[in-house]
Picture (cartoon, rainbow, N blue to C red):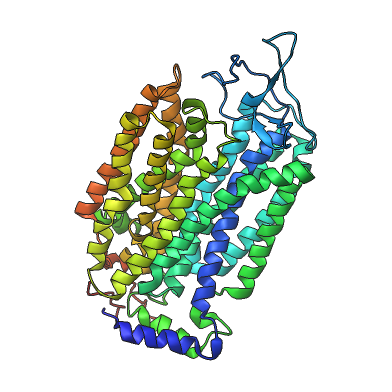
Length: 522
């Protein structure tokens, strides 16, 4: 199927007559907001927990640096100069005894005697719940529609989040159960958003919509950490739950108001825009609901190659999200409070590069400069091979902290090209089952959140220097490069035959029904 660019531009203009905002643009903005709110619910607990627990004195040397055996959850003391939260290695020493550490515990609200093990269970409970719904969310969205699945997810998450101050008063196990439930609800969001894209966004605009998923997630991470800290310092940690709960509720309400399951079900969309969206899909998207052919999906070489490429991209992202603060603080010697913006720069770079590459991908596809398959494979140079190359170079050129941080920024910055490689490829292979495909990919990729910290712990259990981290970086680079090679060889941008949905004959008719043919010229 070939879509003329002049026809596209004409339809866009007609959809914007009388100053009307295209509904698919509103849907795209809501996708960004949903991902921002979803990541806010995911990461805010790691900050809130610091203010909820009783600080534990840990061994430090006279320079104030944490010992290599210190736990990964930093404790906090107030900075007496500006009242901001600082890592516990910025403690003050008793004048009479250099070996005695006297932490100043700020009053941010009630504090609880939860052990480090219990704190790790609290933080990990979300991901166990998230895994539980990543797989069924896609088929549910394809069968029953995405609007209610996402809307109710945010509304219920808002209720549970607002109850956390009460759950903390009950017991730590109640907090664990709450975080598990938030994970269950959040696991529905991302696969379902891919179903929204498959129904609402024309093929030549999908890269920018997928960039909103990546960008919204990164933006949610970047703003939540300082935002939660400010709420805790000025209002107390309970408000660091109440405000995200309010934001989640607002996103759910606005989602129900502005987004419908499909253009044909939207009450205020113009006929011109509805016809344009539906005609842009040609015969690749069926209105018949069917179960995905899982056997064919799981034995498809293009999809298996996509799984590896997606896993590598998420391994790198989760590795830096969970381990970059530890590496920057303990190995490079930065104080997190003084270099917080350095920790966020890689994610900011990935967000903006994701939008840039998304625009480039849509432009190349609209101009028909290369086939979809060629586009997906060629840009793995940026999304996988260059990040791998920077990680290989990092241990050998990164003895200077600024050079090291620059390598990390470049690694995640180029990985922003994943918006036009692995993140959007499920839409190419099977528009009818894009949500199911992404659910499978996301389910497997989430395991990187557990395995990456385990890899770091294995190599740094005795010493915590660049010599030990070198192996971590090289393994991560290998994952990037090997998956990129696999995707380049076996990946595809063509609609697969198993995307085809055959209509079943009705009971009242014995005449066979012609199957919906799925064919695309690429």
